[in-house]
Length: 368
Ligand SMILES: Cc1ncc(C[n+]2csc(CCOP(=O)(O)OP(=O)(O)O)c2C)c(N)n1
Ligand SMILES: [Mg+2]
Image (cartoon, rainbow, N blue to C red; front, side):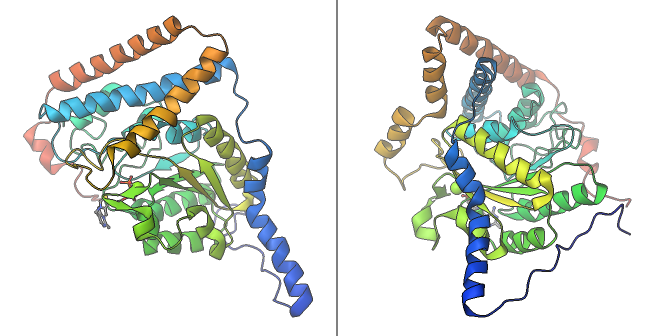
């Protein structure tokens, strides 16, 4: 039974009319689909206070240092299974998640998930302990890198099946609507996942039911070793919602201020009851697809160019210096963050593994 006055279906659309009127109508509708992008074009960057700017810097640096350390622990054999690093993409998770209401909103993503958890303010110790498969890990050491999960934080994974999280995100958004909790779901997926059929089935239903969901394509230019141009007929992913009347936004995912500004616009649109938004954040992963990727499908120069000229952390560091922060102050922040990450790594190395009996718990849901 439906609760309250929440209604799944949108008001019926006007029947199609013939020639000139139809043309005018479709122009108006096209305008509506582009309206969020146009709003972003008016002011591309979020007007952050000094304090917010510093916070963005600290959070992105935490992800970077955490991921570097995770890479080292993997090399030492302390992390088993797969491990996909988020280095280079930090501005996406921080820009978006800093605009969320953590008490109401939910997040779901794929397997490249450590950064999203950190951006949610989850303790680095329990994330690192999950990576090393320890009892204290956020999934009790049984999920590992790809399967981080925390209902307490409304973080619903961490999914290894490419694209699956998008359909589940549709379900989370339906729950927000059904429970009238005012929350929205932020569902991340990659450029490769964007070619999955279930993504479009979800977009269709989400638009039809006016669900509170923001679809975010983290276009890091590659799906494993396949460049976007080799796998996608339409590489402008933000346009792919048009068929479902979902407005798209094309965002520079290397600029945390632009991502945050786009988040403000998209979240308001969704919270005002206008249904889903599709946002493409153009970004780049510096490391291989996973730790076992020799990355022979791209040149070193390409990666170096991003590191040297488009790095999201360097960009905000430059702004902070222009605002009067000293190199020394920023070095102290880096030192403090390295300390947090070292403590997380020590914790992850030294805490106990799960009891063997835990192999049989949390495997199946036995009660509904
Ligand atoms: C359904 C499914 N098909 C294939 C795979 C194998 N696979 C794992 S990651 C990946 C690439 C996905 O790339 P993208 O969506 O761009 O995300 P990124 O790794 O760049 O973050 C593939 C094909 C899988 N895990 N699940
Ligand atoms: Mg990709």
